[in-house]
Image (cartoon, rainbow, N blue to C red; front, side):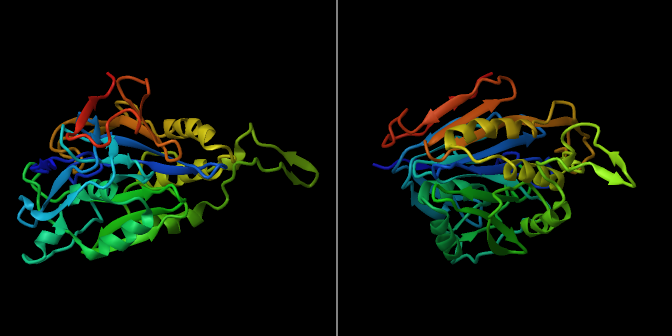
Length: 356
């Protein structure tokens, strides 16, 4: 008999919350010469997420949250694919993860742009709440194409979350083992799906804005520029690295988007195993130290309390070997999970604490 989850998704993770919380998630993908892919992302938040590694077996039954905010009044489904990933606050949902078919991705905060659909009462049973979006995608589909075909046939409603006093606002990034990437946004009440050829995603503004902004940095290169000679006098850069001079360096979402895009695009070709190692080094550049971002209680991103936004955990997922790896702020040791480590046909969810 399939297990059912009756849960009130009234708590959200950092990349899900609305204007009351901080936003600084960064993600990217690297391709391997052996047809593999590696996905990496950081998770930042203004309050402790208390994330754990969550494993969902095949056949686990879920209840969608409808427009009334009640589990079971929305779309119901049974997990087709076993899934592993990171949850938050002990809840049975994913803010990041990968399934056994090699579809991986995460939810990234979009408080200023996300606006969901408004299904009718009759359509409510074919809808889910925003925080269920990644959970639904990873437990149901193997490829980006399958997601693109399915989402237009259902709704993501605007049911408010009681604990947060509003609607969870996020966008979803997905990458599959076939080499396809997708960004899913809900803008002005409409579903917007964009093929992500660059593989990068951060937070607001909308993805289309970020793509246009890339054109402002076409001068950047991993190759140093030759010295400038004027009237016989040579002007040489002070050191190596001048090809990246002008690379934006703040923690703002547009700056992180350009920075991670440049690092990924300039990563030399290599096998997937080598790219997995390199992905950690790229993500290190987006590790926000504790104290670098102070959120005052009066700030729209501070959650009403004095807090610090910092990188709570970092994920690197190898879509070829189906290995999901995560490290926490408290402990740099990497925890690896493979789909051979546990019973994919089990009857219950499994939760493993992050290293502290």
